[in-house]
Length: 163
Image (cartoon, rainbow, N blue to C red; front, side, top):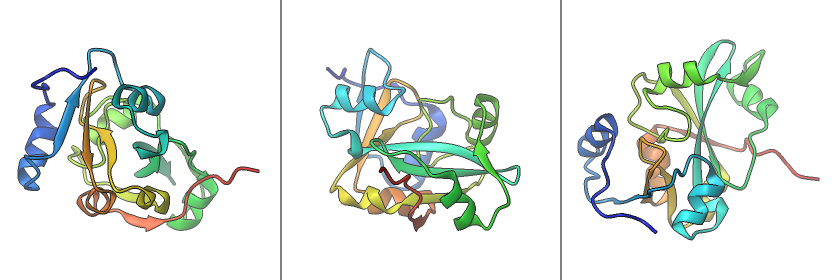
């Protein structure tokens, strides 16, 4: 169950204002929605309608990957998309340093530092997607094309294929 009047992270609230998105639907939950599974359960949506904002390092440079909540990122496909020699998951300190947010609350835009962004095409399978709104207790809804556009993302295929 969501609670009224969500307390937004100030950086993310400012990003919404700058992008003219003050009217997006934002929900706040008393229990954390740090994981895609927790967020989907709290919202009552499909797991794949959750946007995971994941920070990786490509040759030591942070990159944000936007992935649907039901899928995993294939780091080899990220490496190929970026023409990088090595891609690995960023640790919590680098995530916070790069984005200004803690893991579990990283939104797809409104970050402390400009970062290259890749978005998996699978996000386009939904009319509306839900993403973290700067805290582990808040989420927002937006159409996936707008999320990708506002994040400045390059649309690509980086989803791990299942056997």
